[in-house]
Length: 332
Image 1: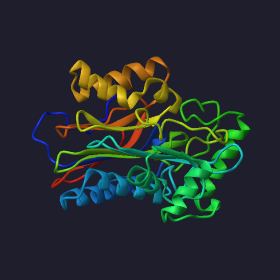
Image 2 (image 1 turned 90 degrees about the horizontal axis):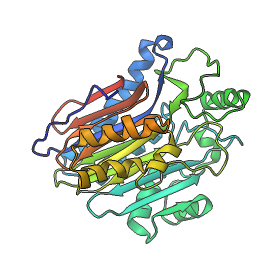
Image 3 (image 1 turned 120 degrees about the horizontal axis):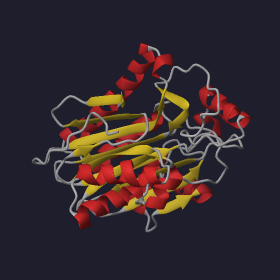
């Protein structure tokens, strides 16, 4: 079902930012009003920070960079601090950023000591002829470009460790959508922590008409070390082109990769003449579902229209045009 918060009327472009903090199954009955408030406040504050950059004449690229950095710093979300653990008990983080004006992009994958992977992805975009670095090479690049490095346990939280133990007990990988066989404990998380797609992202249109997108993740609980999902893959988890749209995805990574989900929305707009709403619905509600892919995406087109579709039960999400109050939500 589509997000209830969306703006899809074609209108003169006004600078706008949208963010997501992952999608998945709802545990609303087990959640306190206070915890829900924490999630909504975090989303609202991060949207507001992005709006502030855009209102000051900042670029879409700067707005999405800062929004995702703030999401990485917030332990409520699975990116940066609070990232999930691999089967081996380690952290491996991925991030990607793309500039719709130039189609330049930067990405890192399988990093374990970079405090803010999105900032290193931005450095790759600006200072390297390459698009993606992985593992040790990515961390060497980060050090060379003055990025803050941390000990591997910097990302650790007890919640994520407990989640890994439950995943191991079930002898399965927590793909968030198929962990139903696991008896999850009472949770204070609005979305079931064991059935939640832990990716964060931001998309923006600035006052100059430029689009940008950024995505970051800790991956999925109990994944094998070395597994990379859609987050750092251009066209799958992240895409931006001034010609069409900026998109950040969250969901079943392997299916988003197989369908090139983010780029597919752009292609449907560009080649088939679809509206943003039509194109994003086609991909999220039809193409992904046909392959048993679950999750959603946030999207802003070149006219400033916003869509936040998801086929899962919930998605942390929010958006805000400059000069307006942020709109945030978790459930349908």
